[in-house]
Each structure stands twice: as structure tokens, then as C-alpha cells.
Amino acid sequence: MLDVAKMDVTLPPPAVAEDIQLGALLAACDVQPTAPLAFAYEGRTIRPGYHVTEVKAGQFAALDCGGSPEAWSEIFVQLWDVVDGDRTHMTAGKFAAIIRKVSEHVGLDLSARLTFEVSDGVSPMQLHCAGSPVSADGVLRVALSPRAASCKPRDRWLEQRKASACCAPSTNKEPCCG
Image: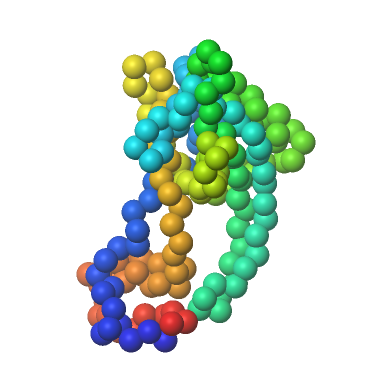
């Protein structure tokens, strides 16, 4: 167990995008099917010729660093950030159609965690989570943020501590494997 006196536990976990679920992203695409869908990452917008090169569904079972079992489903959408002739950003409707076609064959869980794998074909793929789509100037924009590693026991402990901060005394004992 980590000694809480030796670590700064007042800091929240690293800031990440909202971690939107696949169903919520598809619903936003359905509202504006003709709007261009543009993803933003690393301070820039994905290039207009981007491709959805792969959509994967996974079921994961793991043991976290505190010895607790974890299980979740996750959808990975791979985006290839390239210039492709004079193409424009794909429409939200086309993106939704691609995802639904995959779902017909793979059976995607609309409530699954959603991760975007992004690469320009030269740099290694980077993992991102997505925020809620925002419509501006006729474009549906989705902000992608790097998916950071975390310590799930510490994250749960911080959430419990935050939830009970006004109601119960703190034990100041952080559950983690150290």
C-alpha cells in the first residue's frame, strides 16, 4: 500500500475528454447526417481525406494493480489522417453508416467504451477518447484527447473520497498496490 503522506492525493486524475459512448456519437451523427464530421486532436483538425480504416470490438477481462477484477467492452475506431485527392471530410451520415455496417457483422455494444486510434500512416498510432460532438458552422466536430493510463484503485478511492468529503471522516488510506 502506498504511503499517502508521501504522495499528493489532492490532484484529480489526468483530465480526459468525456469518454462518449458509441451510441451517443451515432445519435449526434443521425441528427446532422449531411454535416461534415471533423475530428480534432493534437491541436489540429484531421485532414479532409481521412479514412475509417478499421472498427474493432473487444471484450476485456483483467486484474488491476490492486488485485480487483475488471471487465469491460470497448470499440476501437481507427482513423487514418491523410490527404486523399480533393476529398472533403466525410459526412456524419457516412461515418454512422460505416459503424452500423460493422455492427451488422460484429455486433457492436452501443454503450461500450469508445477509443480512437489515430495515425497519419507514418507516426505510430495514438489512442484517444472522444468528447461530445459539437456543431459549429455546419460542421460536426469531435475533440479527441489522448487516453492516459490510470490506477483504477486510486481512481475509485479518489471518487469515493470526493463523494463522501462532506459526510464522513477520511481514513487517508489509499488502496493501491504501490
